[in-house]
Length: 230
Image (cartoon, rainbow, N blue to C red; front, side):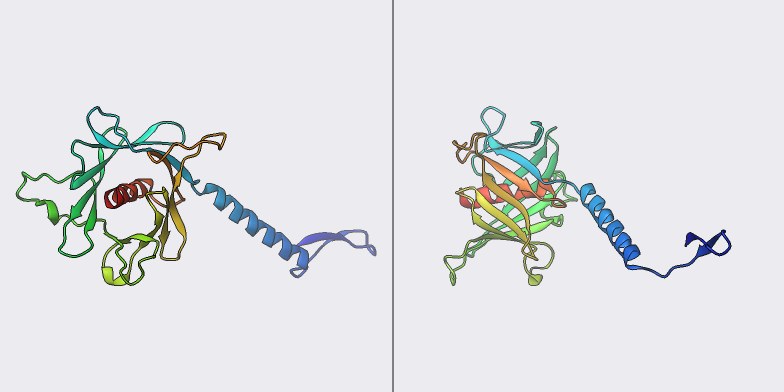
């Protein structure tokens, strides 16, 4: 509703107009601004620096540094290739537990559990009784030997297909984690020096995590690939 002045009587009277093109354009603009503000509220892409080395003397493992230079994750292994790997936060609290399950087939299977490691001395809670977050299988494609699929991540029933597929080459530190819609949710890249003329090699690399994908789970995928291909 707008106010218009009548020339005949010199007074202001209300005039009702139907939706015009200009008003439609205004509503469209407001919708676009709302979408813009929604996008600004989304978390940004996270870039983590992964160092394939433990901070503890005599241990193998990983040290993960955040964008601000702070310690985010750590892995400390006292034996070379353990059957269990614990991903910890900066304070040493267990976040994820990875177990390798040996099979009498070409492909071994890895299971990822959440929280603290199980207490093997507690008879009421056997280690394998806890339901895993996901199952991960290394890809051994005999039919298509040149396939670039490294592994498949299953959540729930395996009959529904993988929730995520990992493609590329971990040995070259060039991998992508794709969801069911083929969208990238995480990526492993070689870390380049600031001047772009040098590389840190294979022991230090970048882990890029897209919004809405858990960075701890992305790091668990790195640990799985390291178990599979190194």
